[in-house]
View 1: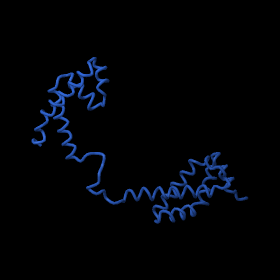
View 2 (view 1 turned 30 degrees about the horizontal axis):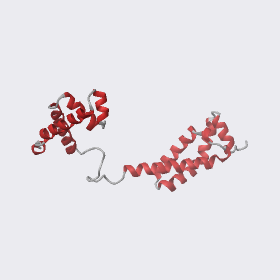
View 3 (view 1 turned 180 degrees about the vertical axis):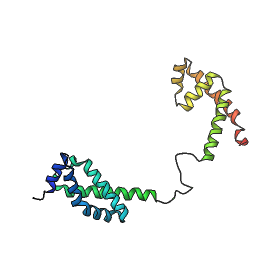
View 4 (view 1 turned 90 degrees about the vertical axis):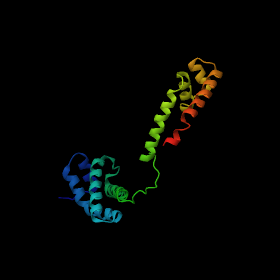
Length: 182
């Protein structure tokens, strides 16, 4: 019986012929391992990358534009899987993160400090009148302009400015000695 070409095997495998894909695996098992080993540098990773590449090729067989050139297409998948595996492993076995490294999240001590400050601010805000509290939050927290606040609350712009001034003054008095109590 005549040996089928890679292109013929790909066409058969696409139509569901498992034996055809098994033959492609048999043909490319050693070259896949060799390419993976050249990228990964060790036996275990090379085997893993080659196996991943075969699974990817099976799933994407319809993406192989030129079935006659299956070998080049497949070995490109092997190289990419090997590089991805090396990248993943280097991240896992990377250097430990130094304690001085900055993160977006505050340290536990800083988080506790921020929580205490937030509680203290909430207490201080409760000493203001409702209108003053609304104006401070809309202006300082939400970034609204005096005219926007005036329009939304139905107050003259000058009154909003006045409330903001006196509210900030009251908050400064309330929070003045807070830093000493830490």
